[in-house]
Amino acid sequence: MYKLMLCLRYLKTRWIALASIISVTLGVATMVVVNAVMSGFSHEMHVRLHGILSDVVMESHSLDGFYQWERHMQAVREVAGDDIENMTCTVHVPSMMSIRVRDQWLPRQVTLIGIDDETYNNVSDFSKYLKHPANRQQVDFNLKEMGYEGPEDSPLVDSGWEYRRQKIAYQQELEAEMRRFETMHQTGVMPRRTNPNEINAIDSPLEENSDEPATLVTPKFADDPDAPPLPGAPPADLAARIAMQGSKQLDPSKSGDPFAQRHDQPVSQTFDPMKHQAPGIILGMAVASIRQRDAEGQVKDYFLAVPGDDVRVTFPSAESPPKAVSATFTVVDFYESKMNEYDAGFAFVPLSKLQSLRYMTHPELGTAVSTIQIRLKPGVDLNKFTNNLRAAFPAETHPFRIQSWKDMQGPLLAAVQMEKTILNILLFLIIGVAGFGILATFYMIVVEKTKDIGILKSLGASGSGIMSIFVGYGLSLGIVGSGVGCILGLLFVWNINHVAKLIEIITGREVFDPTIYYFQEIPTIVEPAAIAMVVFGAMLIAVLASVLPAIRAARLHPVEALRYE
Image (tube, rainbow, N blue to C red):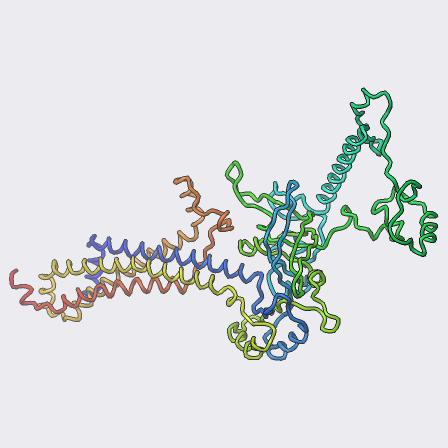
C-alpha cells in the first residue's frame, strides 16, 4: 500500500517530472497525427491507383496484342474460376492527341485505352469517377444533352449537345461570312445573305467608284464547250449516268450533303455535326484542362475542350512496320480520379472502334487485345492467386505476362510505405528523448531521497519494494503522458482541416495546396492498432528509463544511507 501512496505523492508534488510528462505527451501526439495523415494518404493512393486497374492484369508482350483471347479467358476460368468475379479485355496504345484551341492545335501525349463499356465497369471502379450521372450508372460513349456535373461557373455545366449545336452553328456562320468576304475580294461585290431575316448585305465601297457593276467570274465546267477535255477515255456508261442524274431534281432546302443525292445516297446517312457525333472518347480531367488559381486566388479548372468538342488522335497501327493512324473523336465525358498520373495520361474509347482503326483483326483468329483484366471475389488472396496463374501460364511460353495491380504500382507503393516507416522511426526518437529525461530525473530523486530510502529499509522495506516504487512511478509517468498525448493527437486529427485553415490565416500561406495534391481536404484515417502500439511503446520507454535508478535505490544499504544523517 505504501508503494502506491508514494508513487501518487511523487506524481503530484514533483513538478520536475512534468517536463518528462510533456515530452511523452508531445511525442505520442505527434506520432498519432503523423500515422493518421500518412494512413489517409496511403489509403487514398491505394483507392485511386486501384480504381482504374483490376486486381490482376494479363498484359501482352507486344504492342500488337494477342489473338484468341476468348480461349485464354476460358483457360483462366478453368484454373481459378472459383476465385474470379468478372473479366474483361482492353487495348492499350500510346498516342498523340491534338486539341484545337483558338485556331491552334495543342498536343497531348496520352495512353489510348479501348474498353468494352458493358464489362469494363465490372472489373474496376472506372465509372465512379465520371462526370455525368448516367455514365456512372452505365458507361457509354454517346454524348449527353446536358447534366454534366461541375462548379456553377464551370463550362462543364453547359456542355453537351446544346453546346455542340451552338458551336457548330457559329462555325458555319463564320465560314459563310469568310466566303462572302473572299467573294468580295475577288469580284468587288459583297454577296447578299440567303436568309432575308438576317442583316442585309453591306454594299461594297468599290461600287461607288464604278460605272458598271462588276461581273462575276464564272469558272469553266465540263459542260463548257471551251473547257479542255478530261484526261483518259470516258467510261462506257457515262451517257447513262449523265441522263439518270440529269433527270433528278436536287432539293437545296434539305440539310446534309447536297452531293449525296447525286450519288444515290440518302441524306440521313451523311454526317451532320449538328446531329451526329464522331466516335466517343472519355478524357482524363487533366488532359483537357489546366488547374490553376484565378485572380481572386480560387482554384479553378480552365478547359481546353469540353463534352461536345472534337479532338484528333494519332496512334500506331498493329502492322509491321506500324503506320500512323489518325481519327477524330468527340469528347463525351471526363474521368477524374484525382491521381495526376491517370488524369493527365489516359483517354478511353470503344474497344471495337480502336481494334478496327489499328487493324487488330484477323479473318481466322478474330480480334486482338492488349490485356485481360480480372477482378477477384472478396477475400481471395491476391498474391497467391497471381502466383498460381503465373505457374499455369508462364510468360516464356505465352504471349502475355501476369501481374497484380500492386506489382504494376510497386515502386510508388513501396516509396509511400518507406516514407511512413522512416517518419515513425524519427518521431519515436522524441519519446526516446523523453525517456532519457525520465532517467535523469529519477537519478536526481534517488540522490535526493537517500535518507528516506534508508529509513524505509530500516523499517523493514525490502529492496524489491523500493525498486517497485520507482518503477511504478515511471509507469505512472508513461500512462499519464501517453494518455494525454493520445487524446490531444486524436483531437488534432479530427480537426486537422480547421487547424490548417487557422494556420493559413495566421501565416498567410496555404498549408495544403489543392493544385498539387488534388485533395479538397487533408485525408486522415485513425488506425486503433497503430495508436495502441504508440501508447504501449511510450509506456515501455518510461518503465525502462526508471529501471536503472530503481536498481540503485534498491541496492542502497540503510546504514550507508543514514551514516551522515
